[in-house]
Length: 158
Image 1 (spheres, one colour):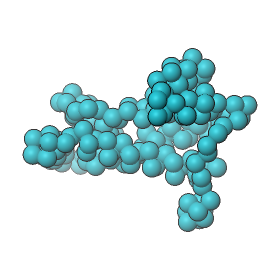
Image 2 (tube, helix red, strand yellow):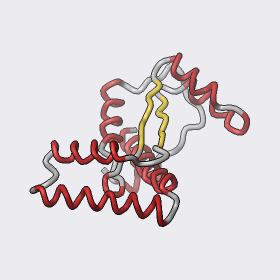
Image 3 (cartoon, helix red, strand yellow):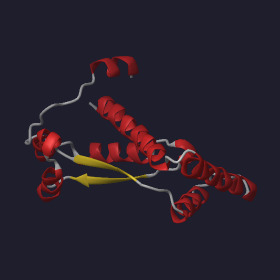
């Protein structure tokens, strides 16, 4: 794989052929790549909604009005549409769920490492919420990392 060549030849499709569908196995692979996207302190402040059938695409397209109306046909004709959503704030439950998931996956060598991660995340959240006053913007930047990873993966996957 030549990442430079892939980056030079990838492009953003402006219109889709509704008869062409991404094979299920390939799309699942893309979703797994998206699931594993990096984020600062592994905060993962996102949700992804997948529209892979007509009713779901219609719901998204209906929201594309005004300046964004030109995107409605893209959604309706796409094989799949992924809606990237960012949490407006990072709450304690989200942090606790992340820590538990990290613990279950064996990311910590011991309890002090787990406590260190918990404190680091709390420190970042405090900083962006209370000192910078822009936790939502910081979270949005993390979601853009996931979007970039997905675009790169789509280029690699062809």
